[in-house]
Length: 452
Image 1 (cartoon, helix red, strand yellow):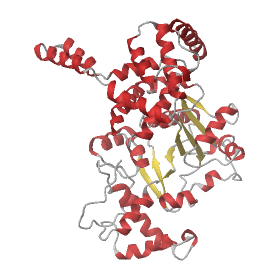
Image 2: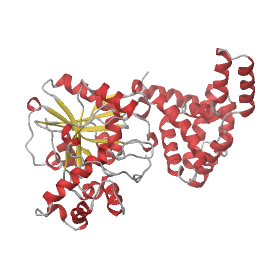
Image 3: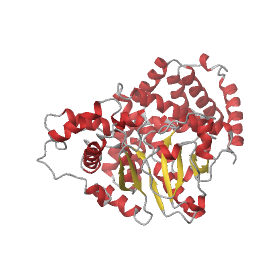
Image 4: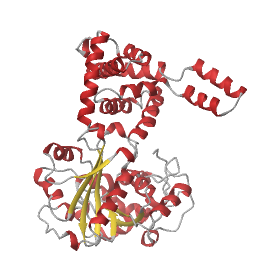
């Protein structure tokens, strides 16, 4: 059923339901969202339910930040599991632990807010409104730990609503509608798009591709998109790929597909994983359309490297750096260090050695790689293929990684085995050249731990 028709049908139901319930047309004049939530869970009629859902979402959107936070607190305090119902289900299970009582226990343990969220999703535009509501939850999560249970319920439902079966992969081209192109410019999070000419250079040439996942309930709002460069070799720097005056090649001449930017667009869908589906689907589509492509790699940023290295440099005792290393790395504090040709050879040697340790040895408090981009690609089954010294000497690149970039290789025959090795044992699959960069292990102290 077309989305527009479905939304029109829901809107008709909503209008009739609002009239039936006597709700005012202005959401600012409606009851407190918390009271509407209780009423919505008690209503059974389809028309009144859709009307109440839309009214609640409109009231929430029109409310002040303080009122919205108050509503989220109420969700945490009053819309958890029904404790009396849960106690009865537990007693029934203990008395007769069969499939029926297990099912009853499962239902009783579910928080009431999960059913509330499902009913809110029936309103026209409900899915998008709930994604925005979760943005508010995430904004307050650090200072409002009670909201963790609410966020957990949102993540549980979103994981089902945004699974691969509901996502639609669409190519983004220079001829795509302007309102979609504007969103690509706005949402690009890795390498900012400066203007329309910059965007055109990333979409129009024969050796460039862009793909995005869309969800039927969010219309033309991309969830995540990837930009791809078709090249003759694995690149070691981002600037040549983004240069507007570069000389494009024919797609049929390319042997390598480079995923150089992957951007999530919806903050409210954080931790809802569909990026790995995107990469694998794009690899399949590219391989089908361009059988000359043999290599699929990323050119990825290393967002946590500079901060991690700074902590190691400041540590009195480091497992990674000796005094000679620290003396060489002192040049990183000098303005314009990346243009000092006399110091670059020594810096390159030490930075790459330290980077090898960062990727292969440094762990978070959970025992996973420190770098979030590494966790993403290694978890998808990629191989750590190549470290690129000064791959990104832009101000952003220098700040977050001292210019370091990395290539992750997606070898089609090895993806599943790599994924299993990483998921089961935490094994990091890396090219021999990277492992050779590691220094001999020193006596270990407790590594500076960082949270995921």
